[in-house]
Length: 135
Image (cartoon, rainbow, N blue to C red; front, side, top):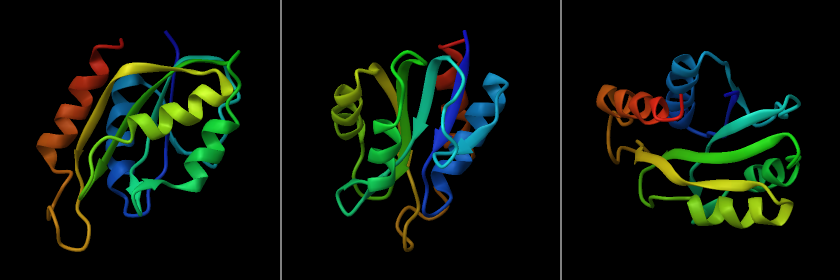
């Protein structure tokens, strides 16, 4: 299996998850400003809600994916208020014909004092355990 990890973050929370997951997979976590140029079986895509939607940069990134190079997307992220971005990401992936895995990882993220310290060490460990099922 081949993997890539990309993330979008404004606070650094999702980056922390991405880096831990990437270490477990033996790849580098990169921001979505770095396109996926190599063929991968699984693209782990980290993102969050911003103003009740995924960021336009995430939409643009997913829209740029080549379905012949990306087997499927596994969604992950953190957020202070809302949980899953799965449906928003899937809607964008469907437009370009890239499959989404039905599983995803999500945990609380700190924002303006809400959920202080999250993601914490337990969240990071849970993210690493989550990616192990794909190895």
